[in-house]
Length: 529
Length: 55
Image 1: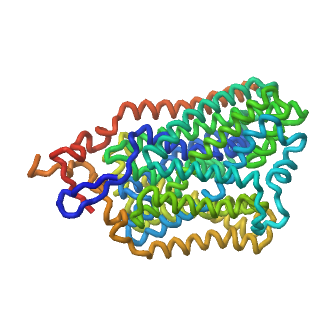
Image 2 (image 1 turned 90 degrees about the vertical axis):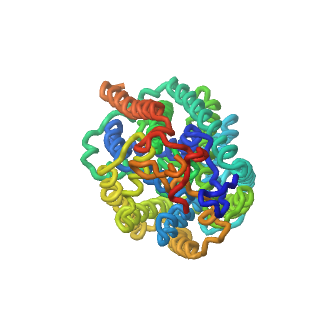
Image 3 (image 1 turned 60 degrees about the vertical axis):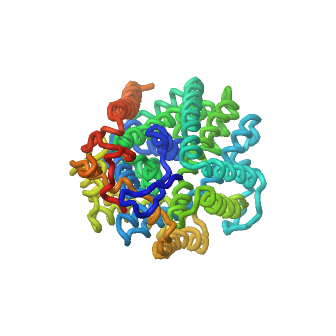
């Protein structure tokens, strides 16, 4: 970090860390967006919601919600140059709590996300000798995770989860400690090309399996009548929203590390379409594999199709045991999950690290050791135990639907309707970006996106309030579901009331981007020009 | 594969990967330093550069 004297010559100010260039940022942003959901959620979502016809609501959702929210996040992060609490604080003093709520969401996701990466690391190894034998489901929940019947935290540690989780956290600390350029960007510059190559090889191998055409036929055959169902459109918006890593601070944080002149919307289009491009690739790979599995077991594709943990840790092991080159498929599939998971986890953690760093004015290593080290301890205490999987399932369901959707809804409504700051963001984007935004963007962020998010949010609240999630005990859901989200809201408000110290980024870090204005070059001094 | 499934595969891949290709070409045509309404302007560090919106 360097220091410089301001134009006024009064107070020396630090400059913020920056990405080395646009491609470092784009790869880091793609690395964040391409995560586990692209691989194990999109194929199922597309298949269940119209197959080939899903492309229509999916593209509409990408263009009317995904990319506009991506631009919205970029504009806030770049214009107000900070992690979410600092960016929202600079936007308006009363909006800081929204930033802290986004930080809380990232904290919750990070502590359980590391467990899934740890499982994938072990399954990469298990793939080499089909360690699950004839019963992948029993092996996963019984032998590997040793799941207890009582979902309440047990503190009975499972060594096969604990040690790989420790490795995940140590790698995160090391990567993030080296900073934005040498750590975060470097991981994505290596990880993303590697992920793409590995996944393309996986898709090619899957396409050569007998029955793959049956799977692809099931995946792409359109069900046009599905387009008349509102649920299919909501599913498309949900898929786009959850897979793009928007609405909970990641893109705000990453764009705060961009240099003053960065083509924000041009970069955003590449990130948005890259994320969707990878999802389509995942759909082809997964359904080729499921087609083989259906044919090998004499079933229909619809009988073997699944998503999430069931797809990765039960269906794929079954397939790996049956397929020619099964070990190779396993290593490529679980290795891809590990890399996609790592680049996403680092981006999620960076929100928390940057927020604490901004508020307290800490150095990079100090912030990383405190924040990531603290997350590591909590993560391993809660998720490397025999009750970890139930807690993970519940945390994931509540923080995604109530947390992320709620935070994005609050951010859009507050910025666009309450504070009426959208024109500032539009001017900022247009001042430095090649793809111009205007009235359509404003209507989308002010009306369309809040309506879609409100529908997703309220319908999920009603569902969870009327039916206990997964049949878990009510006291468990009250503490780790509803209570967890509510405590995040309270914590966010409390943290926003803590004053910013003199050392904090608010007072000691320059924000060169505030001077960007439309239609003029306000940075040229008439005295010196 | 059924003909309609092949058509939809081409449509889906064409639209999304085509969109990716188009956005890549668009970005490469528009360098950071000259994009947007501002166009080319003095960068921080240029002797003519003075911030007017200093926090």
